[in-house]
Length: 236
Length: 253
Image (cartoon, rainbow over all chains, first blue to last red):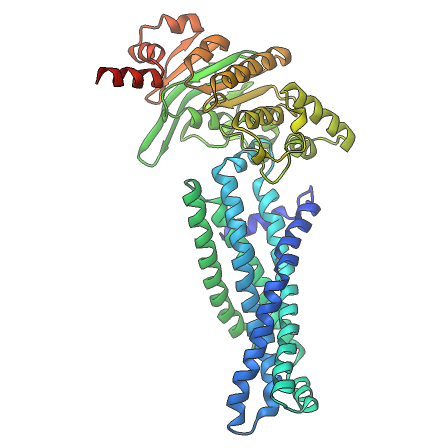
């Protein structure tokens, strides 16, 4: 898998540059994941606010709610949940599509026509995921923070000024940046795993099904493990 | 000319090719025949470098393709066309885009020139009207004809066919084999055909080679094959079509 990643990285700079394929994949990975990511971000933010409120109320710390919601989303839940949702939507599709191309000899056909299949299939998907997962993460963060504000300020009547002020005070730029670094890594993971599993699919429809399942399971677990590792490296 | 020397290939414990020696003459149709699962497709994939052998050489105009680097192999492949068993058309592209694919990849032709060439190739296989259809809308025979048009798009010198008539009705089988013969003669192609279809081989082949237990056991003109003394070849070319046999078995019961 690492080999495929390096091959794809090296081939990125070899012409022809397949801009149209990249845009098509960016549309698929990014634009078409918007609704899923908005809903995920919104309800995560809302439930965080609700749970946080019950906890903070016990010692009168309700005013910290905005900061808590924002930090949880920016550092953890935004990138991780986006990574998992995009894995489920796009990583699985990558494995299924490339797997089907493998078992129907379309990948052999590419090679026979002197087109490198990694260059044609993997490079655009990898870059689409690396570019779009961070953007989707920003979206999830923004919507989630808005959802938290809605629950905290509108439904639970915490003072809006303090809610925002505490949030501004406690959230640092590095929290946002580190969350986005994670998102880059998660994007790369889900694309490489999805493409790798599809590329090595064997044995007809059953093989494609197996490849797809494995892609989702392996990507999801890798994202969670990578999240721990990155957290321990990035946040002191 | 393609020359295969002492080719060996095993997948795990299963020895598929065990010393294949074969010469494929230029500008002729060569059939490689044998029972299902005897490594015919594996042999074909060796010729175009999709699989590399455990041992042996494949010489194309004297150059051993098993030792080439990736870019050199890519260069050699541009001289090849290949028709896959199920067509292997890209199902995300239309018929026209499929045929245009190798042209867009490897030539600097303008879109208008590509369009013209695609139309010519498609009309040669009688499918110009399907140019804007998706591969999933086509029948098996139509897919193979489109795949042939795509294989011929770059005007290759050598065309490989993996079971071109398998799974088609008899009329379509005849039309595909006529198309192969006619195209071969018109363009003076070197054709290598993998098949187990005896009548078609006798009808259009210039040379037939029989693969059995990982080796070429008999090769030569169709005339020579007809009079082969080898028991497997005898049995293979005299075997009745399966449907006929089943009908006879039922009668006997």
